[in-house]
Amino acid sequence: MPRHMPRFAKSLTDLTFAGFLFCIAAAAAAATPRVETTIKPVHSLVAGVMAGVGTPNLLIQGTGSPHAYALRPSEARRLQEADIVFWVGPVLETFLTRPLAALARDARIIALIDSPGLTRLELRDAGTWTGASGSDHDHDHDHDHKPGGSDPHIWLDPANAAAMTKAIATALAAADPAQAARYHTNARDQLARISRMQANLAARLTLLRQRPYIVFHDAYQYFEKRFGLHPAGAVTIAPDRAPGARRLVALRAHIRATGARCIFVEPQFTPQTATIIAEGTGARIAVLDPLGAALTPDADAYFTLMEKLGSNLAACLAAP
Image (cartoon, rainbow, N blue to C red):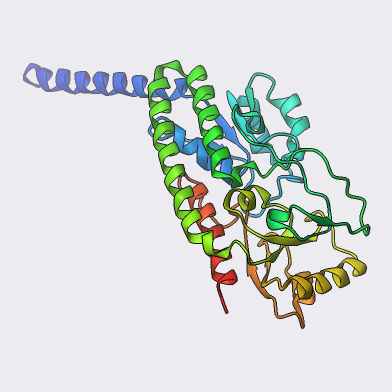
């Protein structure tokens, strides 16, 4: 029996060392901030800054709407346990305002629409547009929409994504000083990637700037203004509100008058209305997705989303 003692002692030592390593890993994991994000573009930018340190959670999955999402009990518990919550702000994720106040009292809440250096655009007036990037408006009174307030689709301007990246890195470094250098290094890499993406999109879209088109709802002006595009109007004032008959007639006439080549629908909503409008006008129907509904939530999703916007716009607008 004694001759087996050394082997036993070695096994005990190995187990003790393994337990020690496990404790270190558990302590490191516990020190990593518990991070919640709302929509895929925000999640992607946060995931890029957190690469190699941790992984943020995503609240709104699939085609869920940031205006009217219903939290599951498991998601509510995650908010209670969160150290940081990144969202665009109450102007977009309207469903989250009360849960944040009730559940995430101990979390640091980062509204990325307030990021330093970020450009905000006001919501455009409703109706059809005649100028480049929707600068002139023909009013349509078949609605109760009132202009004013910030357009929340801030991530669709790469310059804003850069400002958001910097704000994300600053917040994470403050919450987790031990990994601050890693967050800032990741942020610098992400900023360089955003710059390359912007240059590639600009080169792809330059020749399409004078070609008018219609969008499903007015979600794209940050993208349009950054790349000098020519939107001619929106099918609906709000994505959850069907346009009236008078508006449909006006849109068909406007498509003919402007020569709009495309009507862009979104995967979250039925394209039936766009099909009715397009009939007899010669306009094609294609898809734009400002949220990346079908994308895998990861650090690449934001870049895939933006590249798909550019590709889908170019494919439809460049067609003869």
